[in-house]
Image (cartoon, rainbow, N blue to C red; front, side):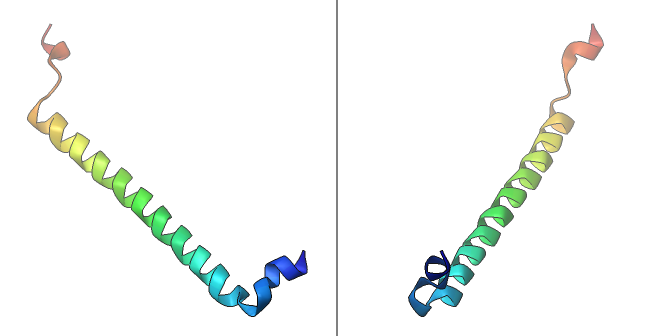
Length: 54
């Protein structure tokens, strides 16, 4: 198991690249969710629901 984690002497580079990829993917997910929330709020401001009128 420790040989797998050591990865032939390149563990620092490999695990750093995995970590960086994870950070980028999580950042993209967070930014997408924030942008979706803002877009939905803008849509609701432009087109309010008409159920309240009835």
